[in-house]
Image (cartoon, rainbow, N blue to C red; front, side):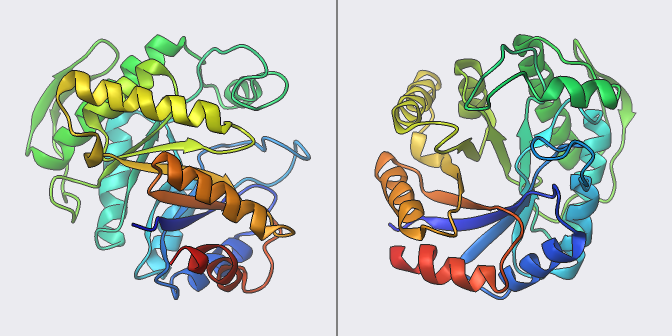
Length: 298
């Protein structure tokens, strides 16, 4: 089966009008299944005082102006919002979008060494977290918090009232109405690559996402797929029930290179490709994507 495709517009150093233009164009092309933003508050590259639009606010505006695209954040920073507040935000957006939300989640900023995962230099999360009063936590704590968030979201989306007493979060008589339009809530996409994260993916996720080259080479991608399959086998889950999604930067100058990367990724087992667009976005960029990248696979 050919892969399905989405696109990502990173809201960094780019005006709202340009992002809106791309999303409205993408809504016209059924070859583009979904569209994504990110969840950072400061630029990760370029001028440090550049513009960055907040992800969930922007996603809501775009959801209200589109009618077909599935949509989400690739991925939501679990450290930036209390899980119950996030559950309310996501429920509201699923209502606004008439059931088109995909709940993208990641552990958020954790304490890591420099030069990790293809990002040169110090952990970019350090400056961002200091600026916004957030706390970097050890990776194990980040994953434990993410596990609690997943349980809270699922219960908010399916139960009328509940208490929650976890290690990190406590809720008393939580009530969440209206519920999401989607039965049992939006599908869950988890982004990450570590062994413990893939264990979480195998347990809870409908979709898994990881970045492609240059951030992650094909040897690592193949290894991570094998690891996810092993985690599924360990708990008795059919690996085919988890969609494997690759986020890949698009080369406007060399679409053949992007096609070659996509082709190799599909050969490894990725069934969904999110094409990440560099700004500034060319006019009719989605039409170009469909012609140069997507249609050759169909």
